Amino acid sequence: MKTSKSILVVFVMALFAASNLNGQRNKSNVDSYPTTFHTAEVAGLDIFYREAGPKDAPTLVLLHGYPTSSHMFRNLMADLSQDYHLIAPDYPGYGRSSQPPMSEFEYSFDNFAEIVDELLVQLKINRYSLYLMDYGAPVGYRIFEKHPERVEAFIVQNGNAYTEGLADFWDPLRKLWADNSEENKKPLEGFHQIGGLKWQYLHGVQDSTKISPDNWHHDLQHLTRPENNEIQLAMFYDYRTNVDRYPGWQKLFREYQIPTLIVWGKNDYIFPPSGAHPYKRDLKNVEFHLLNTGHFALEEKGDEIAQYISNFLAKNKIK
Image 1 (cartoon, one colour):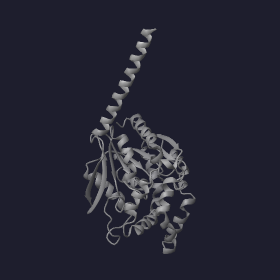
Image 2 (image 1 turned 120 degrees about the vertical axis):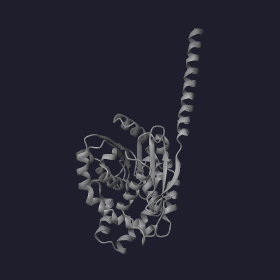
Image 3 (image 1 turned 135 degrees about the vertical axis):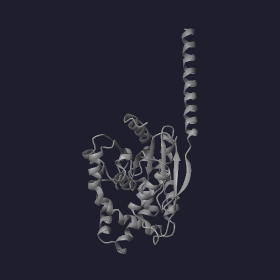
Image 4 (image 1 turned 180 degrees about the vertical axis):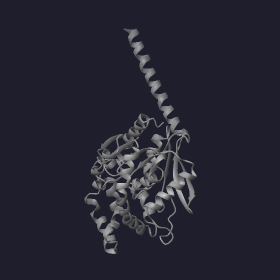
């Protein structure tokens, strides 16, 4: 009896030691690849980007949505930096990147894609997977149009490429696209004010107490800069150009058959899951997950998404 108890005690102690050692090892790996913060000159602008992970590992380019910045990827980068090289830029007028006057720079998805592409060229990154969220989708798909051979995988999180995904939320924007008037712009300004920001982060989540208010206050740092309101409205108007390109992107999906992971907040009112399902029409290698959360799915389901990404990329031998 004593022998059995002794064996049990030794076994438990061994498990504890192994668990503790494993925890130290994981912490050491994270500490080995901390997120670092950089600014590069691209097309005469200072473009801020976050970087993490070993540079000889497969690269993930993380493309943020409206109205946020690379800040949205802060936790995901820590989760994946052990195994992947991660780059997350801020677009002009967002986060910590330059905000040139509108008289000197055209705020458009075309220009955002050109700047991100040039940044990747400067960093000598010519093979990558694209994480596409919200505005990140039309930015990333333009890069894909230009360099389809460079893209190893898509990770699509509430990023649209199908008209089925443009539901009721988009009615005021469709009105703007038809008539870019001050009368049609004014109602849209609330989306990038404090109430609209909080709604975007909190709508559809399971537990709002787990969503840090630092998110919308961080966004306000760039949204309250002079002329930024007008920049956001210009981007709303330019979004119409993405819809025109949907058929072309879908054709490229069918032609190149990029492995695609869908991790989509199913309670998102902006990009509902009706925009997620059509990817399965055009892509054969699709792993599909609807998550019980809202627009900014990483805030509530970040650990789950990180695990899905690791498993998916490993399954497709991107490691």
